[in-house]
Image (tube, rainbow, N blue to C red; front, side, top):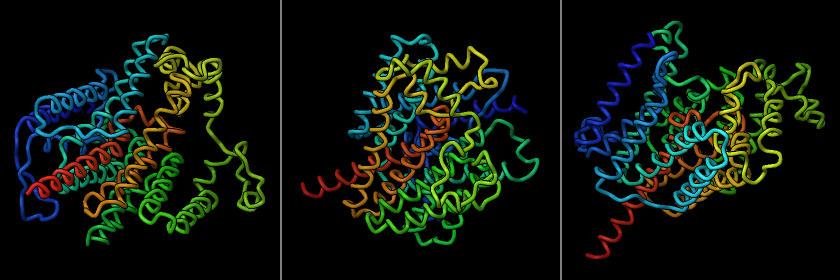
Length: 436
């Protein structure tokens, strides 16, 4: 069945190129009875943003996931250079991101494995290209809503295939792994929550919000549970500022209660099943009681080897990946299950600091935009971008989010890029009106 993924990959690549280079029509998300005319880059953007969850993996053959990533990066570059009629909207985030990529390139000069380092850089390049492409392409709220709704539809299909018995076996490798999907659902959940407040379809979007939050609890993925809760807190902080503190406190309390009263989560969380909420209230629970599935030992091993003694600059881009692919360690694991650990080991505190600044700048820009704009589309997009960015960012603590960047990081960076594009369009309207 995996062989079909080659066909799927070929079809979506041909369609993507065709859409990038030609205009066409799509249903208007605000009025199902109307169609809207879109240029090539707009059509390609909707297709690309909507299908980030499609991996098309093919074990034992070509690395289709890596090839698909490179093809999409190439298409984004071609679109920006030759097909986009509008200019990229640059921000402080773009500048810092480019500085970060330059630091990764410098890391190649002292890396023991530049080849692996180049592969790491490719995964970091994709979110930047997605952001820049969206900022140059998206100028209308309808395009933003169409892209977000398309991504939600694909995510909904992935849930159906994941939870209906046997049906998932019909399309093996089409969707990303469960961990990648759960992190993708964080952004989709926030998009649905935003639509709950900004559209009249409140019941529908509330159901979607709950639906996309459930899988991480059912699968007991602690990282995405943490990311989902943080994203919700960030959502309400952007929306209500200081007035959100009671809501944030309620989300924190709900999270703690879930850890102690959901049996599957409680068993996975602690090394000793007898740990209870009474001990937590007395302050008798610490990190030694938490079951990290040997991750802490692995992180300490990697940091001793690549970070200690190289705290500022690390051991070079690709060091960790080269070591884990070349040696059988921790049962044959090939990824460290912490992008923060890999950042420190590969590129030191400088690399980790720069990447952290990117996330913080996005959140600040989204927060300011939400409270300074009167345009409902811009407000909704900034709310979704800022909250999903923080929610996904915290998952880098204990998962391989960068490895899944097509499905995970592309979402908040894509929403942020669309926000930049909508803002630029509003500025252009103001300039045109003032010149009349």
